[in-house]
Image (cartoon, rainbow, N blue to C red; front, side, top):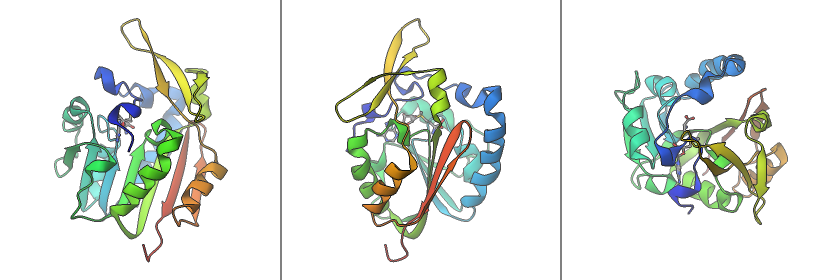
Length: 219
Ligand SMILES: C[S@@+](CC[C@H](N)C(=O)[O-])C[C@H]1O[C@@H](n2cnc3c(N)ncnc32)[C@H](O)[C@@H]1O
């Protein structure tokens, strides 16, 4: 399984958990749509959120869910997430997919700006582990940045596995490399096909993409 260091993104290693990524005015329309669409998909569900970070999405998705477990390996991020409104019933736990409870099955999963940071060579392992904690028919939704994000942070390098790397400012004048992939629909279809998922929806909005699928009922 990938280590916690493998997925970086929103400054996890720097404890920088501003909502800046969600506050850019040009993203407002996409976000308004996502904030309307997503919570309804988790209504009444036993939901799991991977890489919840500082809880931007947790605050919108958790209130309608019947049970909500939010995971993130960063204790700093979790402390911030706990301060969000509407998360009083959320169970927060430090860890990634390896921290899924062995004695519980979920029927809905959400991960925001997470999949793009998973190294390509670890995607199968992630899905196998994740699906292992879900009931048959469970709904899975990943959302992530569209390639437009590269206008701000161009991809500056690729590794042997084909993972892209962006150069991003650290906030203290430095620079750091962040693994960031922009999967296309075919790539995702092939990946899910290897895990017995035949149907998926891939929606591209201007600033975000959304992948949604259900596990087979017999899972
Ligand atoms: C780009 S942030 C997104 C945070 C939040 N979902 C959001 O949209 O604001 C990626 C998050 O994944 C977390 N992360 C890092 N490694 C992880 C792993 N192995 N499993 C799950 N989450 C991980 C980081 O701590 C970070 O909070």
